[in-house]
Image (cartoon, rainbow, N blue to C red; front, side, top):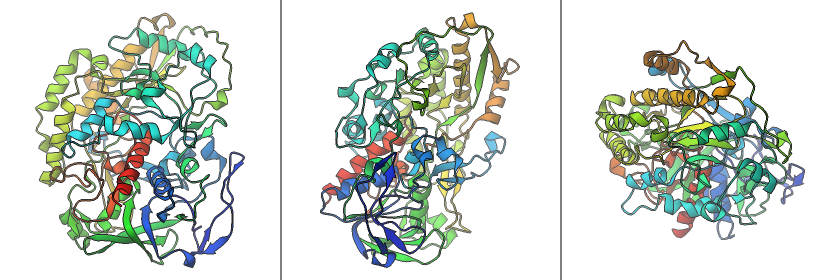
Length: 607
């Protein structure tokens, strides 16, 4: 979420350019401490949020030296080693993450599920699971279907920025040979030596993982692409967000802040943006307060205010600034600047059912390997199956797709949903049903490991939720509603994913080891029993929230257009995961880096 570079406000009255030590290597900037009052009154660009997107854009806009950039971050500069050495979601450290409960979800037996996103310089890239890959070409091409005519927000338009965003380092040759780790640098990756944001591999893989890899080869309709990051799905190896020289986390801070020393690139931390300021219809700056204080400060933006506060807080800031649905703003007593009902709508995330588990009655033999390596370098898993309906549920592909095509979507959205927003959901359905029957749409993500257990991830839910201000307390954390399983098609598909996992562990290749299902267990046998288990166990978030300021046509409930500028005003853009109109079948980190890289070029082209 909020974060970046330069001058830093440490929860009080000081800005500092400090000497930083990351994994034993010192930062290239050093220096004196300034009083907060010496922060400039205006900058060319003011970026709200110093996370994955904000730091990337801040780095790119400041690199020429022509423009001054301020990034305002809610969190702090956390120098603890826990970030660098892994730990999903910051190891649960509340100082690094927002942990916001949702409203009870009726279709999940009224359970509330917390939303967790980064609250530290580097944002969610500092606390995520370090798995780095992108969706398929068909998934990104859906974005253009709901965008402007001849939109470049598609696979072809994003691929150069995917390549630019990270510095790919191949696995060690012996490791790649023994585990059949393949990749395609020309088709998928960049290797700019000046890029300090790395995609790398550990020096070790567990030998037992070969058993799972080989078993997947026997499953029908499963492909094995040379590199899934080149736009096709199947079973493939993917890198980690890891510096392979040190086997530590490589993230937005290490790539776009720590090794950069520019007098025109500043960061203020421990600060909460309260609203965007306008002069007429032009965004002229923002106001912010210390996280632990109430003194309001205003800073002007001479060229543009750029929102990178993330899927949860970007819509809140827009609504607090008078940009949002008129009915909600009136209820909250906020003067309406632009009636934009799509703000806060279209909320999406991946979901999963934890712990589909088996035990072996006969332990499989451990394959002999000679590649060696240190298991401690494995900060995450690097092998997964990314599969479409023809592999997951081959006999039901047409039935599932036809059911979605013929639904009355108005029956599955909240009462009072704006007609433009509903039109957008229908346009998304039209785009999705064109490809839903294809193999190259990753409905399932199944991590492959050395044990007979997995948490099948549902990557394309069709239910939609909301993230909106609380009208009775607009500056408090927003009201989050996943809308989980509000479209009944989702629970059907999630049950199909569990059935696929069962088929896999009971497949001919694994049968010699006598798999016995321990969860959900043999007693969960009928469709109704399985759906009841899914309803009780399903988690509607893999911490990949997107969509609440969607890049779609305005008449479809869109919030930003082709150039990422907010509709109805000037000088205000959004560059984070909230612009993603339809969630791709992958963790969102690499996609957000690509969005931010493209956004920086669009912003510079406006000058």
